[in-house]
Image 1 (cartoon, rainbow, N blue to C red):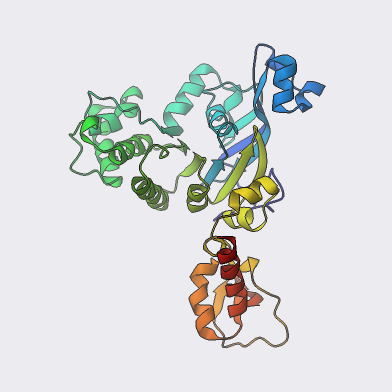
Image 2 (spheres, rainbow, N blue to C red):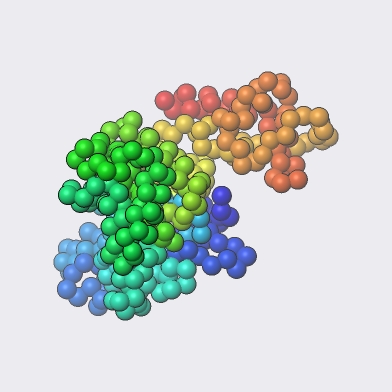
Length: 360
């Protein structure tokens, strides 16, 4: 898990100690309309989305967005329909041209690249997985997975070997010679994952890839993303409108509304310290014991601490720690590294559980 800034800071960064960000986004704008570039840095730029459209006919897609994604982080962007999240992910690789701002991929300025350099970056450093699989119906699974490598000019032997490795990695061994229409929706999305991984990109981007899948298949695919992240460690930017999905997958979550950032934080920060009523409403039905960590419920240790009491980590989820605390019948020590930072007892645990039952 990466180091994070407080949830109240909407421009919080993920990197520390001089580590270079996988993605660095600064001052990013997208305004749709013929004179979009003339609006930036004017009084009109301060208007709401609705006011600007009524006055000028232009529509704000993204408004002055900035954030960083750390290497190896799963960074989730979420919001309701029309919040700007899908526009944002397309700006990151200039599938849509930004009106203003900077996007850097491991220090390389995407927004300043020539067309040739940008094409090479898309082919070698970034892979995207969309809701619509985009598989080639006349090609077998292994050839769909190898397609990007073919475009890149790699030899047939190299790309077939790499494609078979990715087919095996995503659990499709035995289906490599099937055609897409012979596969279920979940299996087709696995082909999409394998194709994205085959290029060995620096960053994987997902634009609501599972929203069209049945709930059980969607859950399986979420688990597959988690497993693949543990195995290959790729930096991932994941777009979703589903809070449960965001909380399950994200190291950090960026919440958008009307093209702007409302909050950036870890799942427990978003649930435990919502930035405003919009986020509070979003998270109101979340089972807090499944998300909040002990640092949100612990108390300061008063007096002598029982050196024989159970030790729990401050970043441990309340639900996972509950059994130990309830069985102990007394305060348990909460540590951050080697340092005791507080105590937690059964009343602290039950307070969260009772609050959940009252909310439901």
